[in-house]
Structures are given as structure tokens and as C-alpha cells.
Length: 291
Image (tube, rainbow, N blue to C red):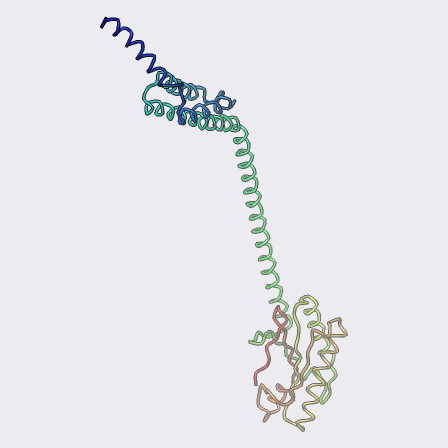
């Protein structure tokens, strides 16, 4: 009687335990792992570029499922589900990296061609810059040579004019022997001197002139002032008649001022009776006479 009761009791207990346990319910972590794997496994990029990683994720997911079906400890089920979820994410990232690497490798020949073209262009530009630098150096040498030749020509022409270099520039002095006594008209010798000056100014159009007239101390100051200006204007007209623009010529009469010798002797007075022509520098400017 006791044995039969024991046999009846064990199956009854098993049935009772089964009835009490109820249907299997998947854990939230396992559900997330299932969903993550489902999404990743349908990604063609993962299938092509990370199949091994996908298999590893599937294996972890299968372990979690088997443990769940065996009603194992939930912590163990969630542990493998978590690993499956992480490995699915790793498979996705691995696929992206592998795909990018393949695309880089495919693009490498094009990149090399671009680099070669770039280096070729850089070499061509460097060669062009070198040629330009050489051409600029040649131009500078030519300009320096022309400047030297012009300087030599200028020195020669100055010598021909018998002009003197002063702090105000080149000064050509026309003595009173080029004018009749007490007259402002140029004598033939004066005309020749002016003709040479006009030729010089035609050769150097960047230069201007200041014509200054002076007298000795004989006579009234007003008369000498007027005579000095008339003689300066006479030289100006002669230059204009030879094609020199009036814009390049200024005149002034100083009368008895700025003597270069004593007025107590005839020789000194003769030196003071003069017309000075100041030739400008290359900028066309002439310093103002200081008192």
C-alpha cells in the first residue's frame, strides 16, 4: 500500500510541477538579441564583408536559446544573449570597416594616378617658376645694362654741354659773352649752346629745366632784375622754338643777387652777368635755391 502511494505521488508531483511552471517566456535581453541578430543577418554588407563575425553572433544566440529552452538560470541566459547582441553589433562594424578597406584598395590605383598627375603638375609649375625667375633675371640684367649705358651717355652729354654737377643738379652756365651788352637777345654762340641743350632735353624727356638770370651790380636794382628775367626768358623761347615743351621750363630773374664773384672788378662783374640752366633729376624735380 505504501509502495503504490509512492508511485502515485511522484508522477503526480511531476505533473503538478509542470502545470505550475507555465509556458516558456523569453527574457527581454534575449528578445533584444534576437531582434539585433535578425536585422544584422539581413544586411547584405555583413553577409559579404563579415560572415565569420556573424556566425559568432549566431552561435552565442543559439547558446542563449538552448539555455532558455532548458529553463536554465536567467542570468546565464541573459549573459549569452548579451554576448550575441554585442557580437551582432561587432559584425556590423566589421562589415563597414572591411567594406571601406576594400573601397580604399580599389581606389588606390586612381589615387596613385592622381598623385602622379599632381606631382607632374607641381614639377611643371616649378619649372615654369624657374623659367620666369631666369627671364626676370635676364630682364633685370638688361635693364641694369641699359641704365649703365644711359648713365654713360648722360655723362658724355653733360661733358659736351660743359655742365657742372651741383647739389641742385646739373648746372649749365651761359656767360654774358653770349648776349650783347645790355641786351637780352642771344648771340649766335648762345644759340648754339641752347641748341645743344635742346638736343639733350629731347634725348632725356624725363628731365626739366630751371633758367635763372643774374646781373652785376651796375645800374638800378629794378633794371637789373628786369634784365636778368628777360635774358632767362630769351633762353626759354629758344628752347621752345626747338621743340621743348614750355611745361618743362621755368624761368626766374634774380638781378644782382647770388653773385659768384666780386662786383669791384670788371672780371668779377663779367662772371656775375650770367644765365644758369639747372637740369632736373630723373623725377623732373629741381631743389629750390636756398637764400
